[in-house]
Image (tube, rainbow, N blue to C red; front, side, top):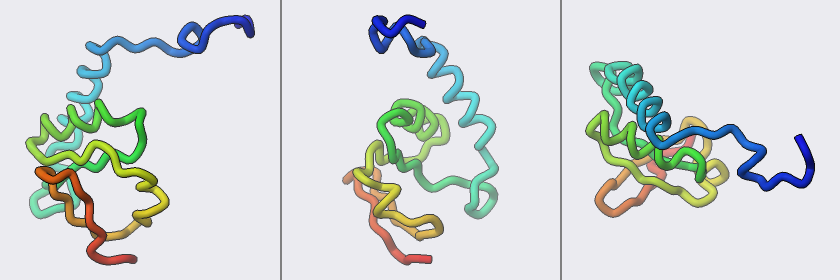
Amino acid sequence: MSADRLPHEKGFHVSWDQIHRDARALAWRLDGKGPGEGGTWKAVVGITRGGLVPAMIVSRELGIPCVPSVTNGTRRIPNGATVTVNGDAGTVTIVSLP
């Protein structure tokens, strides 16, 4: 590839239809396989910009709340932390740390 190409000309192009199909397929694969009782999921929390649309589609398909963006979430919420998600307010609260 030439160095004089624009950024969008260098990338891997995916249509909105493909994003929706893939996110729905992921939701179907996740359904019934969550960590909750009976394999349920409680919520989806989006951490980075690139996954926000798929995160919202997955949460819609699973019928659970989604908080689409947690600023610096990977720095502020350590692995293994227990959180409470309020989908109406769009907040994530750390309940306990590992």
